[in-house]
Image (cartoon, rainbow, N blue to C red; front, side, top):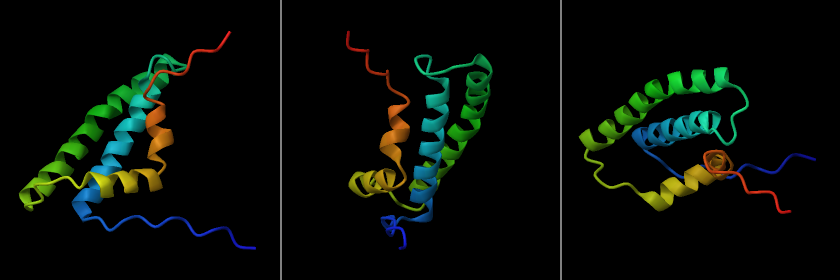
Length: 102
C-alpha cells in the first residue's frame, strides 16, 4: 500500500517561494532561541548567529517581489503554503509552552 499523496503547494512565484522558505527558516531559528524552550546556550547562540543571514534572505525575497511589481502579499495563498510546509508546528515553537495543569 502506498502512502497518501502529499498536499500540493499552491502556485507561487519564485520570490514568494523564497519569502516562505526564508520566513520558515527564521521561525525555526527563533524556536531554537526561545528561552522557554531552549535546552543549551550553545545551540541558541548558533541559531542567533544564523538569524542575521536568514533575515537578509527574507529581505532579498521581499525586495525581489517589490521590484517585480508584486505589491500585494496574497496572505491566504501563502498561509496555505505555510500549512503544507508544517508551518503551524514550526511556529508553535516560537510561543510559550502551555503551563502544566496542577
